[in-house]
Image 1: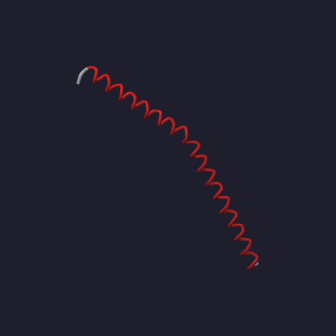
Image 2: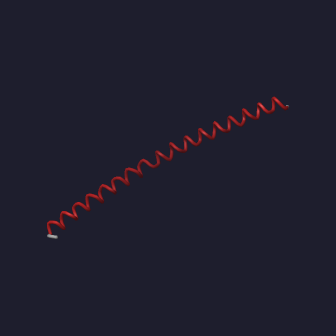
Image 3: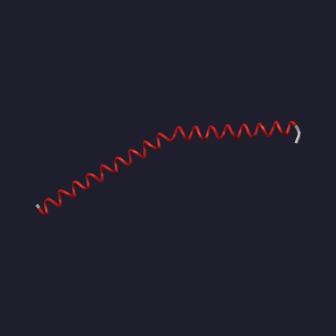
Length: 65
């Protein structure tokens, strides 16, 4: 391997590392948004389940109370 080949290999490696760092940075930037989206869906689902349980409780009270 010549010095030029080594230089080219190092340049390719540096570019690959740079792309990897950019990918990691981009994913990290998106992560909070994804977590927030999941948290909102979870909260909405929890509210829906809570309302369904309240409705069921009212129905049972009406039938037995």
